[in-house]
Length: 146
Image (cartoon, rainbow, N blue to C red; front, side):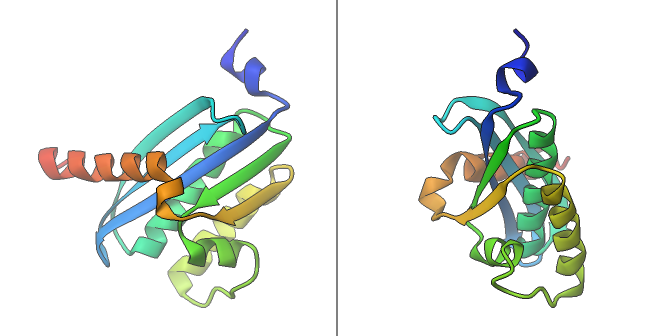
């Protein structure tokens, strides 16, 4: 059975973290897709360039939503340690910043294309794998310059 066949039609969890060393500064994203039971489906990291921490958090969310789309889940639970992004995605806070508003619109469109997406704020300690991946991408960029 293929990976897609194993996950298609299931609930999935997306954990994302954006990190910026400096604000703005060099930034990266970490993404983890797993089952509700904690079984790893996919993970990834990406250097993002120079941006603010909030922009990096949104970029990580966008990467996570794009990643989970390929598995055709029936429900998606997103966990992030960015309270700002979670509150903006759930309409508890308005988005006033121009660059963030564009990222918010992109994330909202991706979430709207998925069934039953929820957003939950978690403390960094509950998001360690995504945090580790984002920091690994930053460390690799610092070592190699790529």
